[in-house]
Length: 372
Image (cartoon, rainbow, N blue to C red):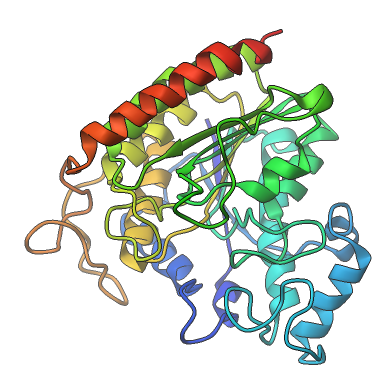
């Protein structure tokens, strides 16, 4: 089983701004930690330099007027306070915005090529997973929706793709892009939209037309922990995978679900996160793994390093390496543990009851439609 990790030092040429919560430097921290553990030296690992997508590939989903706005914003030539969602706040205009979008999207497309034409079972792009952008509008720190563009590429070669999103924020841009398409089953676990951006992802958002039943949402109350999450995951995802039988799974592995992330209110740890990674490793015929949210940089580095180790069936030592350019803060009293200790939320019982209600609804009303 060969796996591919796509990365470029050029990622760090771009910056949303000093006050913005999305720090692109988290990608370098992850890469450095993987390298310190020797995870790029494994015999079946291929490391690939990220190459930029071309404009034609972006225009396969995004509108020409929006692409033009992105290019103008990238050169500092876009006037006005807001247009196409660009402006102060979540989606700032910065030098190289267009080039950054091309690069992280190109890396995701490379992963798609690896698993469909390159003989690899897994391709991982930690810079990908920017799932909120619509065809004509930036949203939620996302300018170009690389998961959508990647799934469109995959559909040129395979008949069915399952998109699994475990970011704290609902994968709205991907859901709406394929809301009427039965070739794509979108599954999103996220904090309830009544309490978090983007406000969508209700359990009743099930798809439309031929795509009805192929949009699955599992909203979770603030305070949901690993046990609640995993109970819902086990009740929903294996049945969907069996019924849909996807040729490729595309996953968005956001880690803003972790208990100390500054932008969300879920209480996951590396324990629940890694269980999902192991499931995908064992069950996916082919797997395109993308990054996503995560606004505590040390959490991101530890979680995505653990994910890459799990993808390659490597059991890492518990102590963090000391040979890092910048130390990564771990868990535990001394902050030197790679993995988090198990955690049970004070709101566990309330969250568990809500999850049970969601699972009951899906089991009765949505999952049977997938296997029809």
